Amino acid sequence: MHQVHNQISLCPRVPYEPIKPELPEDEPFDSARLEAARDKAIHALLLLAALLISMLGYFIWDHWQTGRVEASSPIGRLIGVAATGGRPWPVVIQTERGFFPLREAVSIQPGAALLLEDRTSGDRFVCDLQRTVCVQSSRHTLGAVR
Image 1 (cartoon, rainbow, N blue to C red):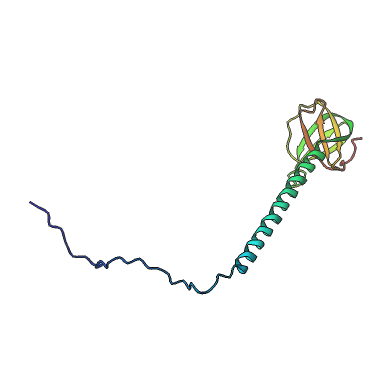
Image 2: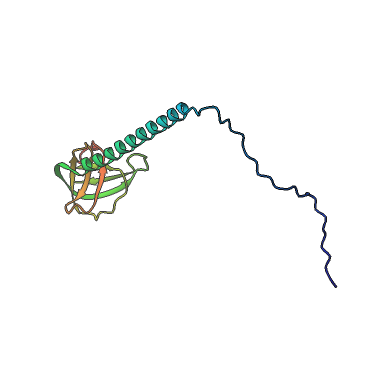
């Protein structure tokens, strides 16, 4: 048996002729609009670069300010930890000097001595004595234990 190929084509072939655009050769090219668009694009890119550099500078400065300790005071030993379920301060720890809301959950052994650090950024952190654990706290305590 031999195969028969169908020679019928649904799309007849047209001879290929390259299409050349008709350009007016007598008219000079006006590059003023092109240069204005290029200048606007350059200005937009420079503004974007300045914005990104400013944001990077702010993040570096903020990180540096958060890392600098202005004052440190002992707040006693850890007595207990409670989860409040609130959004901004989900955990509250109890020490010998009061209750301190924390920004996030932390693993500290009961009885561990703690410090309250005031940073140059205005933030407060509760840390252990070795400063291996530091977590952001509210700027105000919730009251002293009596």
